[in-house]
Amino acid sequence: MNVSRAASVVVHNRNMRGSRTTAILCRLILIFAVACSSPTSSELPAGAVRVNGTVHYFNLEGGFWAIRGDDGVTYDPIGGLPPAFQRENLLVSIVAKIRTDIGGIHMVGPLVEVLSIEQR
Image (cartoon, rainbow, N blue to C red; front, side, top):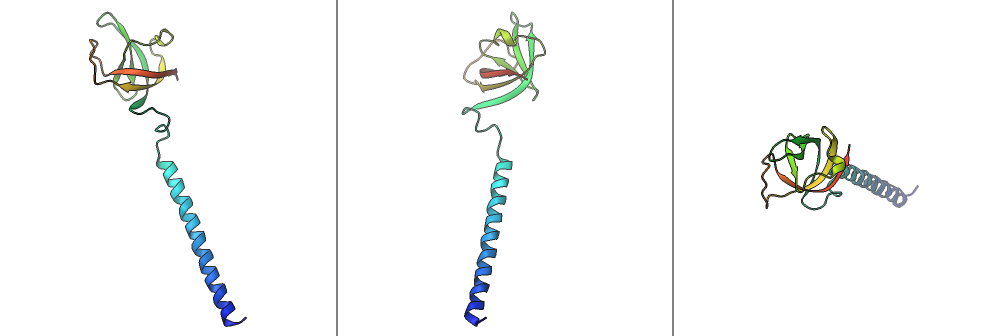
């Protein structure tokens, strides 16, 4: 093998090693980015939160249904819960907007505008 051909093979091998390293690095960055992203962030409307919790009836101010979140916060749905979800200790998942611009009389927790609700 002549010297120019040998030099060409060495340069080619270095380039292959570099492109392999770049490909592996790109894959690792992609895996890291996907693993660190929130699985629900793209599913939620702007300003909304997802809450898992338990439905409870509160015998205050005439009585009302609210959701005690697994995070320890009681969420007070504006306009109440739909009748199908008015069951004590029902496990639910809601997507809601916390409304700090309005007030209520229940005083058990933040008022929320329920965007969706489903039984867990």
